[in-house]
Image (cartoon, rainbow, N blue to C red; front, side):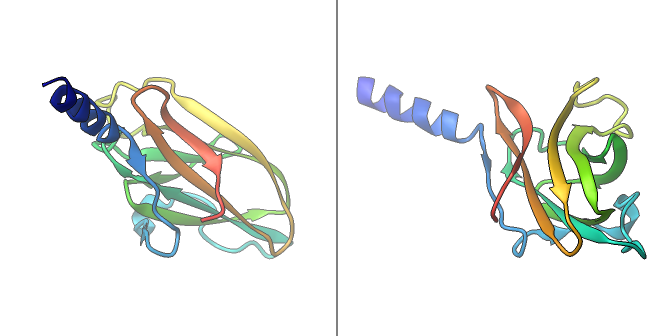
Length: 142
């Protein structure tokens, strides 16, 4: 019986985290949910790719993708967005979706990572999490 309870606890914990999706396998965010940085600027720029994991944590709501604090896209689970940002230092982050009407209870959720974008460079980030940490954004190689 103890073995059964232990196995069920492991299954429950595994179900409460997200699963990483590579950018090439994720579904693109529809154009109507990309609010900024969707077009390549005329000057030096790079590409920031943000992919959101699949899974339970925050799965009922879109997450806001931020560039230097600007709400730039609304991303769902299993989706990827490509943003074209001018060269230089930037903060790439996530926030609660300002259009969800607060239904996810994230309120003032905001997490950011600093990155330096060089002309022609590609920077990849992953939005994922678990029930302990919640959602987070981190650099990734996928």
